[in-house]
Length: 191
Image (cartoon, rainbow, N blue to C red; front, side, top):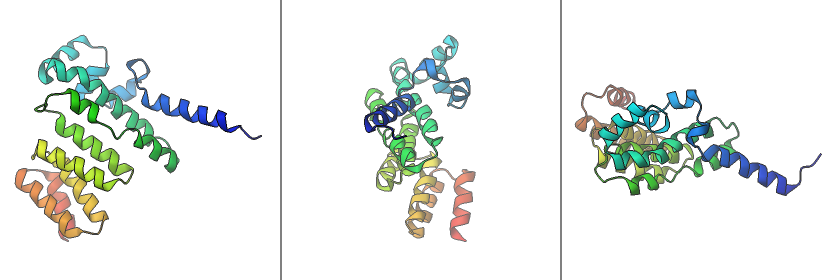
């Protein structure tokens, strides 16, 4: 039996809208538990946690984190999609983290993480140029945050530029010499 095209389009729209329109009501307990603590506070129902994280991050910044936290959940849901083409379309919709960045202060302590997550999403859909920009922004926002250095090295290695991959890891080690993850990657790259 052939399904008419309009029905397929509607089914696709319905599927993607369910993946992206993450609201508090449809977040499972497992999804909530997988989020960083500030997202658990923002998306959960614990008033004391909300108060605590609002104080730590600032009320205005904390208010806008629901967009970022919803994106983290939607990203995990996208990853569960088996078909590569559908997964790509799903991730493509998640690449705009600018809303949270526009509504939070420039010195917001989670800004590096937001840039990093944007870069990670671009990396998953193989948009390496866009991923590189986001990882560099994350490093500029917090030079001691090791994950963007590691992700940049993966991009450079994937592009066949081992010299650049080693260089970015060494730059990370200058900023955070205690990072076990950076040391481990550096050891692998120089072999």
